[in-house]
Length: 124
Image (tube, rainbow, N blue to C red):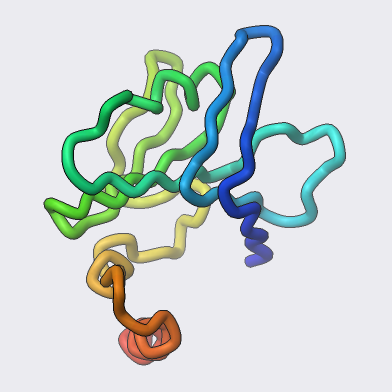
């Protein structure tokens, strides 16, 4: 799978006067020049969030929002539907990813290299 990180790029949609900057975002495959939103936006929540950004992401048309909730030590997957975002156990954008397993290896402050190796080993 060709996943390309865009970092914390600011996305705006003039028609709906919406815009925000995710903590991290990714597109699958080669980014098209006219493509103005990521396939996945990742938000990190430490403490109580000040704003529910999902309404803005929905207005932008971002297919999935993943939320790292530090209090729960888990990644929550939210898929855009006609009525807003719905929680999912798995990602539709990255269907082979075990999100629960990945959550075990999100440990702020620890070595990313060691965690990536441990995650790879856990995949078998």
